Length: 280
Image: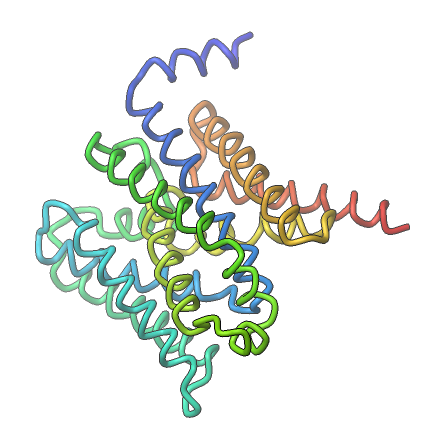
């Protein structure tokens, strides 16, 4: 009963409830597009955009912007579009474009923070941004409302264009042959991923975002085979793992992002065993 009493005492604080709401919504949004990214073999776009978001946060800090989100979100969306366009280039392939943009943004971001930061704990700020920390517990009500609005928008877009996303994910050539605007839908997917990356920055940090996007999808694929089943299972699993990870982190005082990813890894191992047993 000690664990539950401690948890109940923490839940009495509004900022803890805000963190759980944002965490659940972020996990749900991340899992929806994770299946598509894995199947399209473009999983590391999340990693690349997370580094871009880190660079944007560094610039916002240098400029002393009161609301970093208003700068970081547009900057990440623009880079997602550029990444998509550059990845389709015959001169620079997709994986090279991601590596170039992600490493460049990470290096420039850290350089700017080092040169212009007014913080007395630069290493702590960088570590917090890269790996996530208690920043999820310092969200303001305006940031929570913005997160809810963006999350609802992402979910609505995914549901509305589910069949088009399905077609583009599995066979772009066929989708193009039947008149689907493949380029437009790929662009929409890239923009949605950029929004999800920005939402997830406070939760798990820029270096761990890819895990939040990929692990639930890979776990669901070990057991289920259809796109719909994998997507639903991935969404449920992502939300459950995030809730468990955040509760452990809040009660135990462990890093939020690392704890969530550790729970995702445990879930993946469990699903891998289940899939192996069912396969036999």
